Image (cartoon, helix red, strand yellow):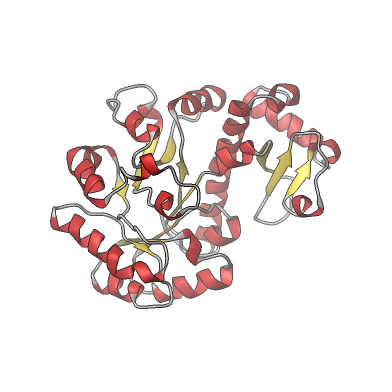
Length: 301
């Protein structure tokens, strides 16, 4: 499986390479953002060499979210997206998603119309499903698409995802999950790729993700809060406070060994927190692929 890191920027990529020695990251870039402009830098530029697979999102999430910047949203149109892809996109990105303007089952007709407008001018977008119970999946299977994405609002549990995956059995179609890096979801099903902004979002709340090899079982994810406030009961179900973290010494050794940094340095440096979280994604990806192989899912590897 491939994990695409969403919203990444040259500064963090350069710091990540410097701190880890890992030279390749897979990236999801959103249309109409600063990251899209950065991708226009010639491929021989140092930071561009550190991008492995790249995929372009149409950024229609902005059209469906409550926090909307009207000036930016005016620029997010299917015609503009198609024009960009025809002019530059195909030479920069390995794949790009369709312009899925409406993120609920009512938008199937509109979204399919946008999809086929792109196809009619020679583009090959990955269609995005927003109706898992209706005919949209069957329409896309019958049309012969080889790579299909599932909108993030359409799955939230293994039970739901299992029903979705079952509809694709025997088709050979590659599946992408939007907006998740949940181990249980991506490791237990034949998912080809997913994308996540977890590397940035976790740091935004003063936390780092840690793949703790001391834990039993296949999922070794732990999220550690670096601040000094007391976590409430809800927080504790997902995060661990560094103050009383059982594996604090293990974490300290890990930070020194992998990044040559200490906790005091990390606690007040968001860039370093993001680097640690990106490294977690690389470990997560390896563990997911290992579990997928054990289950007989030969996907992105």
